[in-house]
Length: 215
Length: 252
Image 1: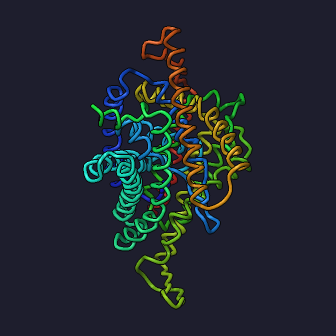
Image 2: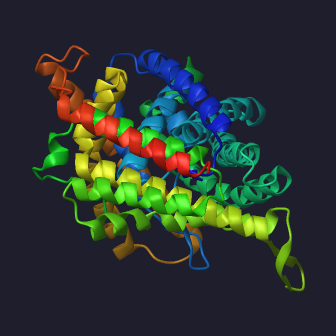
Image 3: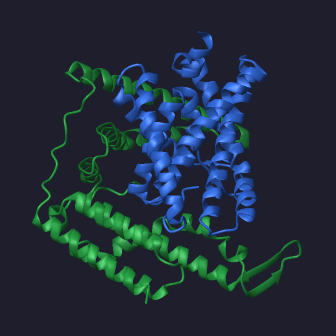
């Protein structure tokens, strides 16, 4: 889903850059509140965790493998602002170290995989908390839906950006890209649900959104 | 897996990272503006980037190799381009359930976009390999990227290797013990990610406390930034003129 340079036109590059720069700026300020203190080192190590987690491929059958994106996981564990900040930095590093995702496409990639993914998963998690209750099983359904929709919505945004840039007709790109990611999202949803249920069993105090629930 | 930092002493090391960042951004920006079908101009861009690479005393082959690593992923994004554009059909095949049509415009867009991406990746590879990540972050700071971001970038970079080693150890342990159905594998992967998260979180807290104990007050003391000297000004101006000339050719 990393958009390389050369796919987006100038208008899309500029628009997404402005939105992302603003969004990440606000996220940086809000993350400070979310993490209670200026825990820069903690955020840094967790960014490295997302990075390492993304490199752990797991088999999804028929000889292919997938990996975690992690926006929903971070959003549920740390809160959406911290998640958006950490994910944005991970995307920037991926661009510089692996050249995965373009330099001028950074705005679009941050918008899709960090801002949209973190916030959509957070809101869907909260909404489904109301729908299914906060008991373990209902809660895990919420986690699954949050992670699944974060992947699908991010890919839809990616398709829209490619469509607006005129590289592909929107009518083809949107269903094709979103359709593929509706499948990929299932893996993300399952893994995220397993990770959350594991953390909840071992260190329930680390789940930020759970602490809010108890309050 | 992670390409190691380039650590050599040469002309590009002496250039300010800001200068190289500015030139790279300008170059990729002009590539984005380029009409997709101006193929001869792509050759000129290639020459320009190769000049940068050779000026930096980097070996050409490793940089080219590195720029190709990410291309399969680019191809993945671009693979459906030839089939979906308007234009004259130049290839047609009925696969039974779907009719595949390749159009001339679609093929042109496909090749143009791939070349644009590859040249951008090549420029970025040159930037990173001739600068090194830490100097690059220094450059970003020099370009007024907020201190919080640059500090976090350095932190993440510092701990990627630590956490990744931990992840590899966990996965080895998992693979030597867990086998069976797909669901079991998903559960095992989820659990090791959970362990990895908890260990990372606890490590982060320990690092934070260790820093507090040494007088950390939420502000990292700044990196010493380089001087933007005459050589940098020359490099930036000559490069910008080069990029401008190359893009003017596309208008002819």
